[in-house]
Image (cartoon, rainbow, N blue to C red):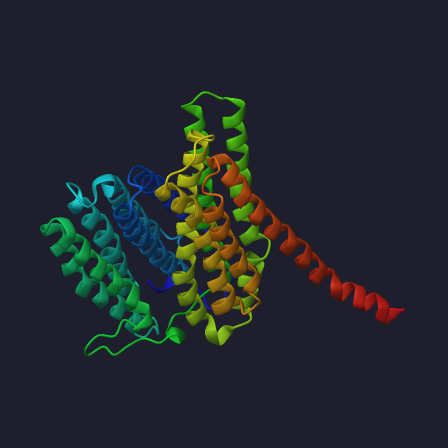
Length: 394
């Protein structure tokens, strides 16, 4: 089985089977945004948030595995197909995950985590530095599993509490080094990471999430009369999605890859941090689909309090996620994006009496202005060395 391990320091790209695996998560994101749109309350947002965290954790752990093992081999393809089925089961549960379909959620989430992590233990040689960290990860998953099962056995708030504790422990795993009695704990340096593959996989998930915003905008508009005002709302929704794409891919994508490539001793830690930070970006985009639906469905109507919160949450979560990325990983100035998040909150509060479309256009103006300023600054920074060299040669 040793041949299925990726060679150290060998640059890899995402494979077709990984892209095929992602198709299930296209459906997962659709289910999550639909669930939030139909339960736009504090409790509904909290439950959807828990499901977002669970879906992301299942996906990102799988990304670590395909970073360690060659997804082009038959055995790894097989485990990805098993993971696809588990993901589909979990996705089917989402509309009633806290009700009649609780067992489906547990089967999907626990299934993909435990089976995949057991697979890594079984195919990793004992002499491989990855073996003991993999054993700890599997042991941690098994230790948390009873809480997920117990949550399915109870109802109401008790279920939410148990699953919240289970998910908190799942997320605490990497920070605690998956420490277990008799096995010790892992350190970030134990987790080998291939930068180009890992960053590409994160980018692809963001593209999937952004695609859901476009799909939701189109699906909502297609069910309603194509009035000029509604078509304008579709345009604003498309531009909003484009602004979110621009704010990440114009600056963060390349810098994230450069940071990982240039930090050989820190790659494990940086990969761990990215695994946490990207969920804020993903959550912001998922909420975005809800915002698009609200504005396209009712472009001239004043939004209610819960709808206003949803409208502001999209850009704020996304901007705060990028602030955390800048601070923790990229180590570049972050103040401008934080200020933009504050301005968005202020604009939504002050403009709460405006029609939904007008308010969404204001938020678009803020994000578009931020993207434009950063795009100009990025290109000026890129041409500065060339100008300096030209002056030096003259």
